[in-house]
Image 1 (tube, rainbow, N blue to C red):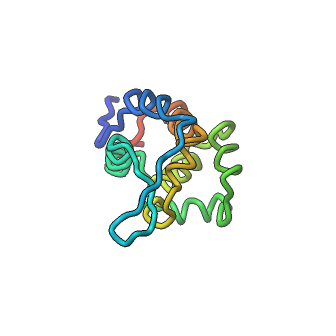
Image 2: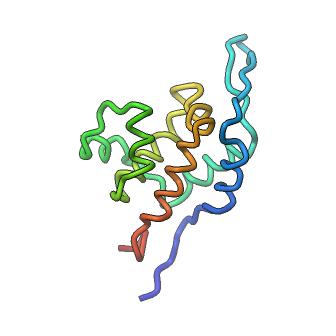
Length: 136
């Protein structure tokens, strides 16, 4: 049976980018309202846009996280999941919330990229992708 990937995500291109910026602090600067905001590389926005448009993005991540008993999750928990989880759907939901939540938590991406957590999440997600995804 041949599967069709509806909205692919370029893991290898973004892995290179995330490797480049790992350990590099994200600069923060005042915006229009004089509040400081992280100044991300344009490739970070491209990564987020491509991921959210892909089948890897869990549009129901809140429900998935609740089902996986992750109502309260710390950065250390996210890193542990990125390093050890064998659950594709868990990693998919966690990655989705990290990508999505920059809108609500300025600096989420900064923390996740500086420490290499986002890179590990994406590597784990790719390695756990089941045969036939997303058509299974």
